[in-house]
Length: 125
Image (tube, rainbow, N blue to C red; front, side, top):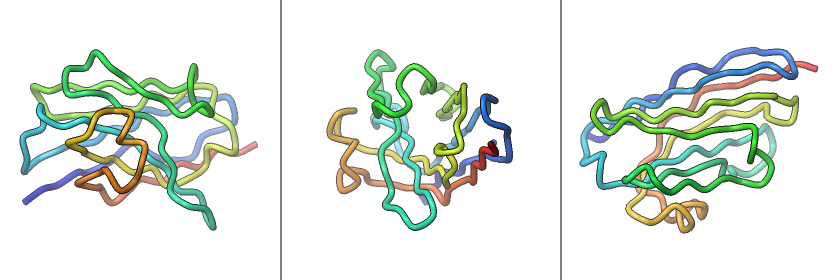
């Protein structure tokens, strides 16, 4: 069955860095756009970043552009989110997602086919 398993979350001080990983299985990974979303307590889930199957196209939310970098390893079915210059407002549960849509359409939650269970990121001030 389809599985997306996130890891790498934790507690970090403001200005610090974290690298999230997502291990995918159960579907044709190289045919899907992959992305990251986040959900802070009491808020709706929001788009963070996406990367095309070909790796050449990326899309970022304005709030993270220049600080976060998404990447993927098609051979090992992994997706990564490198997060730098973290701020307290980045605190949230981070979710990995897979979509048959392009990276722009993937920003809409409805266009994602598979979701992981999430990993918690807490940024202290």
